[in-house]
Image (cartoon, rainbow, N blue to C red):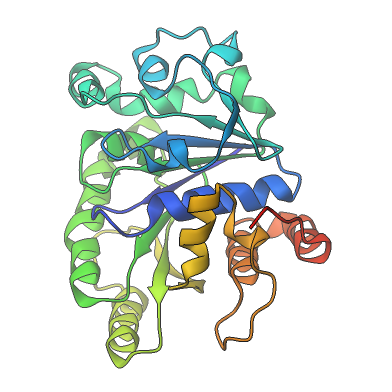
Length: 290
């Protein structure tokens, strides 16, 4: 089971949108996929897709350990997308933050819970996270065993926030190596890319910082993803229609790649072992209602 997280210490970077889109693409590729909405403040991923069956419990009961994991129907909702399940965020009063801060195993609780056999039937678990530096983001990072995808828009303030927020957060988690926990590699995904000079300059700046390793004095694995997500209306349309964006756009006359190609390329970069499954999505072109 590959557990990846979509992270940023800044809000508005597109984490929920692309967590949902990546999950939908993996599901259409035949992978059994679980999307966990870990953003209790703005639970966008919880409402991205229509639910065929909404479980009575969600993230709150999972982390508070009041849900019976041997009865997954209590906890795991089924979306309208075949192969895609969801654990909704249901902590509107932000009680989890305090509870996890005071629990002896708080930062490790999600990591430990995902070891339960209930979750072993999934090929991919994708965790959306809150856009803030908090114990909940630390909890999500420590539960990630594959890749932490860091979302950044190509503007200088967002690059600075990554360097001032995400990197220090990771440095603060390095002592967990003493418990045998290896931090996941962080791979930067540029979102809302365009062809303006400002965007190109910001991209050049962050690429240089990462390649030269000047972002941290410690050995934190950070790299740039080759795939870039362009600023396209189809991602907003997909959200409004409760459809993954790839189902809505396989071809385009623009010079930017269609949404299906971008999400395909991202999936192949993250999970190269399933490239054949991802290629089949572009060949079969499953579609949603426009």
